[in-house]
Image (cartoon, rainbow, N blue to C red; front, top):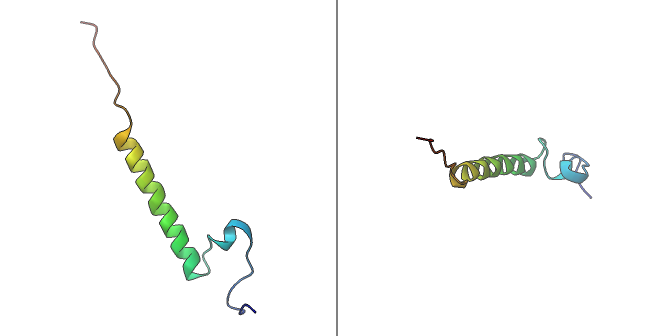
Length: 54
């Protein structure tokens, strides 16, 4: 039986919540992962070829 300190959560809120330490860690890890993914995308995307018509 679950203790009263742990809330009854379902769906995504079971994994990403602000009540439990594990939920807070999951939110932090997903935020950091998103920022790393954005940084890698911006760093590795193809560079545009801007040429002048002269």
